[in-house]
Length: 226
Length: 125
Image (cartoon, rainbow over all chains, first blue to last red; front, top):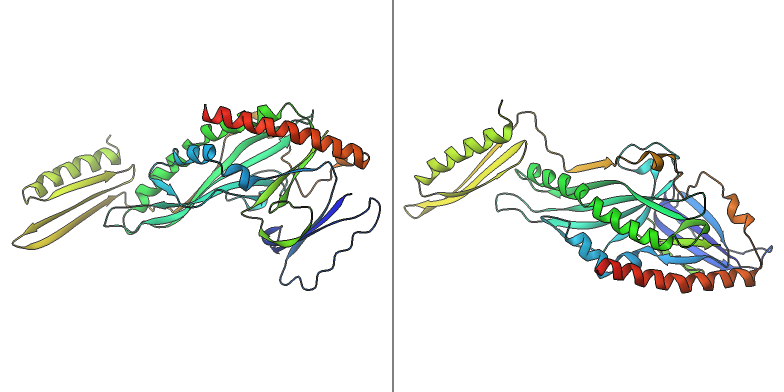
């Protein structure tokens, strides 16, 4: 039985806090969704999901010790202070310019960091992000590459921001070859299979019930295998 | 011509020598465009702290930075998915009966478990 999922987003362009409701319905028949009060929402998406859809919660997948160790060993002076978060981000909201469809969805893999400084500066807190672009090639095989990076922090004043930024500007892109190499390993294993399509779903991508999530921080990968 | 880092290194070394005459032990941190010297010392029961910050006059460090990565030409030709601007024709073409869909799903999920295990083995190896 196919499932209709309806998502309402707090921000424009399908971003931020998200309310969702999914309901199965007979193929070719109505799916009924009643929202008693959707509150302040600025964009919405509806998706009809096939029975062959296979869903993987990317936050659960990414927060395994092998990947966390890889990231932690690449951070230099920064300490990771949160789990990995994996959200989607429309191209038009990337923190750097990028040519292409403005509503292409990229994955933003990010985590919070803390940087300790000597006594004459305040410590710094912020986050590090990597942006991943995914695609299907002509034969239906999944591909992905690291598209960009960013960091953002507060603190480090009055004298340490120069040094902190200098180190982050080296360490954050410096970790990309390792990240891309892991991606390549995963993609090559998945390359045994062909897909008709893939898409992302807010939260854990559950096929029934309602709830709230934040699409900036948690999305799932949905695959339609052939 | 000396770059800023060389100038900072030289100047801080001389400052450290001078501070050493006051029994002030100091440390330095030098980056491309600014540098810090910091230390503590005491004299006659009074304790002192010293911080010297050197920087290029027009250098304003940022706390936000982001970059697009140089990509291979082949990657530039690829359409990023999913896109909320495009329709997907292939999915509807591939629609089949519920039973067949569930078989496809079960087969893939079985393979995916093996793929996941193999990935973790490779990551650990």
